Image 1 (cartoon, helix red, strand yellow):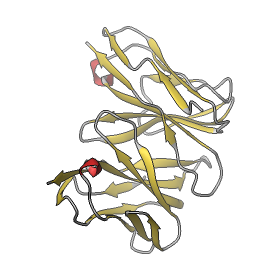
Image 2 (cartoon, chains in turn cyan, brown):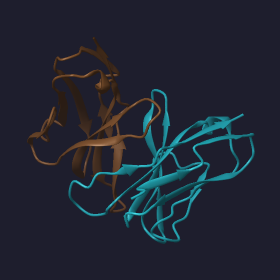
Image 3 (cartoon, each protein chain N blue to C red):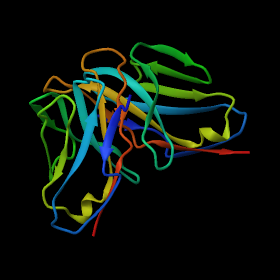
Image 4 (cartoon, each protein chain N blue to C red):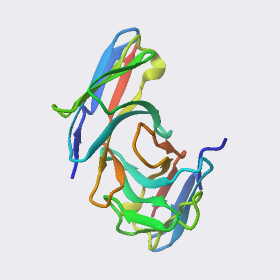
Length: 114
Length: 113
């Protein structure tokens, strides 16, 4: 069982470039989300999705787009990379609904924008 | 909005007990989670509380008081491998209906021999 898989693990971009961070889960989870983690800031929610075809913004959505065409995949697109987007990005998934359903995290993508 | 506070850093001795506190302010509360994160790795789930009281899982216990907006994570018989960041996270319903997870900034726990 692979769980949540993120690619790539490391990436260096030049300012203004675009790229897509991939996230896939094989647990049939309805809820998927993207976080960024910066020193001293903790994990902050970028975008989330409660199911295929449904997405919404989190705390820090500017500069990022998402889509959810299938239950399994939730890619995060950087439209025009900026140095402020240098961070570690985590994708997470869980079942929707009430109860103690914990989120499972991917291993992270370490992005540097120069 | 939500506000979650936890100490930035704590130091404890191998074999001892340490308590990491977390206070929060939120509406639409739907549970409190604790995650462990080793340097350079992803967060991993430790515990969940939605009702008041203590939940025990081996060497780790977590407590919740909803009326006080307060939780703590208790780690017993500390081992060197427990050196990590501990993240307090609150699940709450937003206006859109989905219950998202908001994290505190994490407590960096250092275990000394």
